[in-house]
Image 1 (cartoon, rainbow over the protein chains, first blue to last red):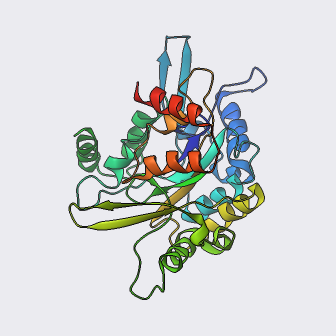
Image 2 (cartoon, chains in turn brown, purple):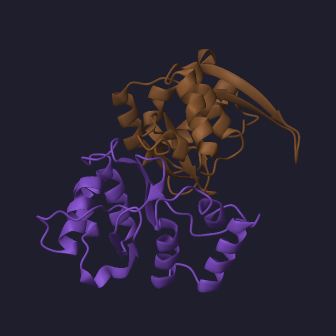
Length: 152
Length: 152
């Protein structure tokens, strides 16, 4: 699982606002992915099948968010990490990509619980947990334990 | 300014414990930099002149820490970001490199203040602030404002 350090100092997922010129949600998302992740984003090409969930925020302005997740091979992920350094937004909107630790260390806090104590934009933390559950990357009880440990 | 997401889900600087085989602090640090940052670490080769400060922790065990900072050109930094993806520790001890936002956005919190609200290992947050001041990367009053905003 991959997230990015944003220009604003918070962790989030690649994405952004839809342009009037974008033909669909997915088209807009794929445009944003190319801007933020560069040429390697082709392996992350998103379709309707990758849709996970939506949310609406009312304040300070009405924003509708749509969340997609795409499973990739380690090889494609490594390719994406390399390409991202040459993306238009690298060093501007994106300060770096980070892999999410999908484990808890023996001390019960290092790993995913400590990662969840970072600063996330908007719904990114909830979306991360949702995706880990949906994609079966971590069993639900391990996820709940990690959230619990992060709140202590 | 560059930091890394660690395997334990916290942000920190590259480094590690000195080996009995290391001839000096700097030799040990340069060995660790090569393990964590890969071939591009040659541009970050550290000498006594890059020393910034030390600290001692007594609990749970006595640990002595030494902090070094090295100024690099943007070109060397980009080279280092690329090389780091091929480092021995990439995907194991190091989950990714991130640039630190050295500014505060107009909302007064985005940028360095929000970055400081992430989860840092040990003294890494204090060391970040110390290095930004020592190297003159940000004026002292801007640093203090960012720390203040991050605590609200």
